Amino acid sequence: MLDHTTLSVVIGLRLGASIIQPHRCHCGDSVDTYGHHGLSCSRSAGRFSRHSTINDIIRRSLATAHVPAVLEPIGLARSDGKRPDGMTLIPWRLGRSLLWDATCVDTLAASHIQATSSMVGAAASSAEQAKRRKYENLDSSFIFVPFGVETLGPWGPEARALFKELSKRVIESTGDPRAGSYLGQRISLAIQRGNAASILGTVPRCGGFEDVLDFI
Image (cartoon, rainbow, N blue to C red; front, side, top):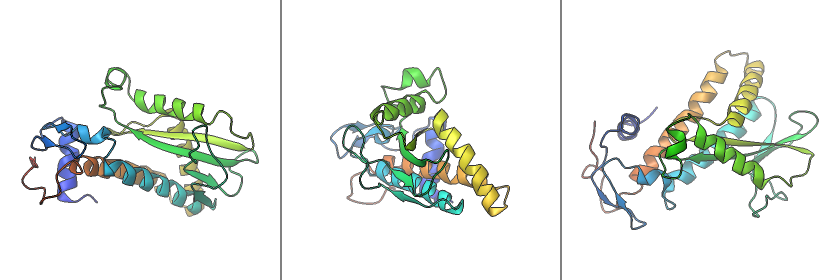
């Protein structure tokens, strides 16, 4: 469930409505009435909580499918030295463990808007390709899957493929035909909560949100 403030923000974002009073973000940039700056601000707290939640959902779903996994496995690193988001402890397919790295990119960012306005999921697909390049030297004993999603909802092709396979296994494990739908809903809610947290995170911490929000 979404609380009233979060629901108001995410609905306003989807409708392109005014959702917040203009103000200055912690980073120093101006935030307009649509609040889009918070979705791509490098100092946005919502980005980190969303990323963590999505990875935890994937890990828990794998556990439900009887495939134990760990987050940020030690001893593995991509080309920039950072660790992948998660790894299964037993083979996922073809005798190889699954290694995944998730990312949520801003559909409305200036660097993406030209592509996303003409093709659904363009930013997520591009982000997945960028992730794959960072893991091009990965040991062949792993199956690597970049899990790319966007702030306004679209998923990248590799994220959709992993979701389809994971949903199938969760359904087989639980016997509940709705389990796959529930998994998709949890990820979608995590994205929307992250959006709201990112936008609200630009508000000065001197008081409540009531003075800056334009409720729908």
